Length: 455
Image (cartoon, rainbow, N blue to C red; front, side, top):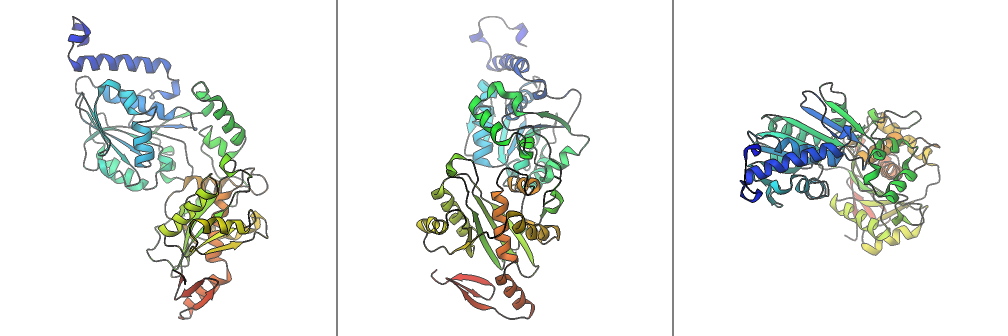
C-alpha cells in the first residue's frame, strides 16, 4: 500500500505511483463535480445520466468510468467496454481522444492506445474495448466485461443488437456496472426502455448548470435559438418530451420495420432553407431518402441526411445519397431558389434527374396527408432518426417557430412516392397485373423502376 512506502517518489513501483495518482484524481474530481455528475448512492447496476447539450454528461461519464476502473486496488485488471453511436466521430474522437475523453481522465495509467483496433491498455493490466453501436458493438461480443460506458444512446441506430445482444451478455463480471450518458430522445426505444425501468438509476442535468465551463457566446447562441421551444426543453434542459398537443404526429405514430431489399421506387427529397445565409446555421437543409414497396403498399423512410451547410455541400450530400441508395430521382422544393436548386445539383452531377415541386399549399396542408399515412401504419422508419423524429413529434402548425426542414423533406418524398398520380398508375398497374411503361421527362418507368435514359 502507498501508506507504507518510503523513499523518493522516483523509487516507487509503477503500480503504486498509479494507485496514488488515481486516489488524487478521484478526490479532485469529487471536489469539482456537481452533485448530479457523481454516481448515485447505494447499490446499482445501470445509471443513466440524462442531460442537455454541454451539460457535462460526457465529462461525468468519462471521469466516473475511469474511477470505476482504477478504484479496484486489489484486482485492478480485467476487461471493460465503451460503446458510442459511431466509431470515428463518437467512440474514438469523443470518448477516447476528446477533451473529456479517457486518454485525459486515465492519464498516466494508459500504457497503449491502439487506434486501429480500438483498444486501450492500462499499466494496471486492464483492457478497454472501444466500439460503436452502428455495427452492433461487435467488438465486445464474447468478452468478460467488468463494466461499460454507453455514450449518447439516444443516437444509437443499431441499438437492439448493441444493447440486447452485445452488452447484455458481455457485462458479466464484478462489479458489472453500466454507465449510460446522453440527451434523452423520446422516440428512441432504448431511451424509453431505460427511463421506464424502475431498476435504472437516473440523474438529470441542464446545459445552464455547466455554464461556467462553456463558451459564453456559444451558450447564448443556443439559448437564443432554442429557449422557450420544445426542442430546447429536450436539448438544453435534458427533459423527456411527451406527445405535444396540436402536433400532427404522435411518438406512437412512428413505427420501425426493415425495408425490403428491392423497393419499387426510391427518391431523395431536398427542402432548401429559406435563410439568406444557410452556412450561418439558422436553418437546416432537409435531405431525406424514402422508398415505396408496391407489394406491401408501405412507404419506408431510409435515411435523414439533413445539414446546415451551404449549397455546394448540401448538393453533394444529396447526390451521394442518390447514388448510395440507388435512387430514381431527386425531388426538390423550388420555392426558395427555383431553377437555382436544379442548377446547384447539376453543377455537381449533371446526370442526376431532378424534379422541382412548387409549394402551392401551406406546410400543414401538405403535411396532413403524410401524417395520416403514418397513423394508418403505412409508413415505417428503418431505424431511429432522433432529430427527424423530434421534429415530427414536436411541430405544431402555426406555433412552432423553427422551420421543420427535415419534416418537409420527408413530406416531399412520401408525397411523390405515395400521393401522386404517378404512384396511382403504379398501384393500378400492379393491381391488374400490367407492366407499366411510360415516360416522364428524362425518366422512363420500365416495369416498376424509374430509369434515367441517359445513364
